[in-house]
Amino acid sequence: MDAGLGDAPALSAALHARVSSLAKWTAAHDPSRQSDPEAVLAASAQFPLSRLVAGIGFEPAGFQEMILFEELPW
Image (cartoon, rainbow, N blue to C red; front, top):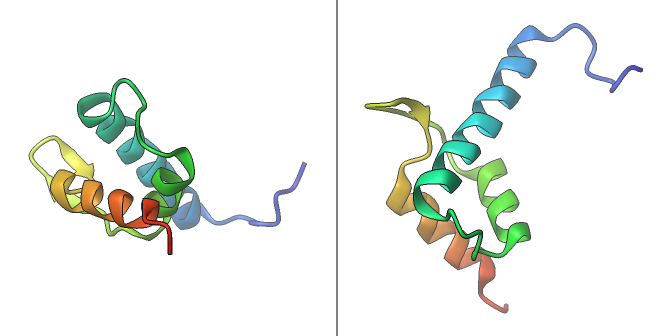
């Protein structure tokens, strides 16, 4: 099955980094999964990755702020 990505190792690595970062952030900052799932996914697609002490990830406070912003009823 071809997802239309072709042979793109860089794209695969970037996607893996975002999924791993989301898993790490969720485990540390939202283990009960109380955040709106759509807001979390939107933030994980847009928020920049950072080099953290534990490796690549989302800066926790800024990422949480973006999730809360996404949850606002505009």
